[in-house]
Image (cartoon, rainbow, N blue to C red; front, side):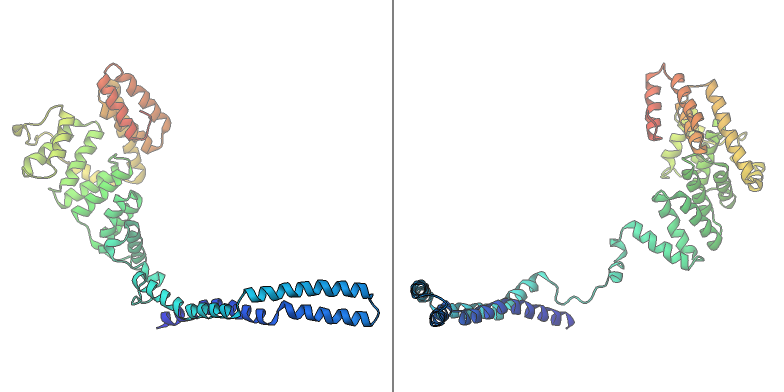
Length: 378
């Protein structure tokens, strides 16, 4: 009802704006006839002549000129019928009073939404979840968690979404809160370790490795934790240990498991040939994870973890100096130096890598493509 009242006021204002000039124009024409002005001038000439202000000749000339103008004005009045002008004004008034509202209503009904209620800005932000941008949904969940920090389900839902958006540090915090308020599970520990590795540029740090070990302690068959522990062994230069972990996964896992192609490719990468069905059993001499390693990781402090990371990187660098044909090893080394913030060593490793594979065009192209993926000039 309020909307229609506003529209009525606007229409009345528009009609008034049209009628006002018409009314003023009619009054101006009626009260401003030129013939009346010229007759007054003739009277003034007679008065000036009687008072002796002008001579007889001047008065005669003035009368002639005023008479000429008076005749011309009379001719103009005869050429413009008064009745016709009045009719035109009446037609314009009718159009303003009736036509404008009709045109406004006819235009608004098909184009507008007369039955739609008020829709404030605050309500517009509350759209259906399926129609909102992902960033806006994340912001709403974050606002909810600020008021309800103990909502474990909210942290569990938010954490993987933040990782998908590339906000790895925030995702790590969300996974930690999910564990704190929702309890420890193998999946949550493994997901936390995966995000930590992503935040480190793909390097399985000691802290991330500790999370994967905790996940396996809760569930010895956790696929994600096993895969990343194998990746950690590969990055540390222990290819045989990595192969043993991945062979064990292939031996125990179902044949139609969706992760088998990934693990098979990783095993092929470290052993140099596709694994055979008979060679997929784990080796007794290469256990997946020793109790000593698990205990050491749990007791490890931040400085020790950092020292372990640096030790892993240095061992990888030493191995590559002895065998420089490992393109993936060079790429891991460059990425590790970048994660550690050592730009000079990263450049030095890049230079050594190119020298090592300069004689093999295929390996050199693979190296340059990998460097481009790292954001470096290939």
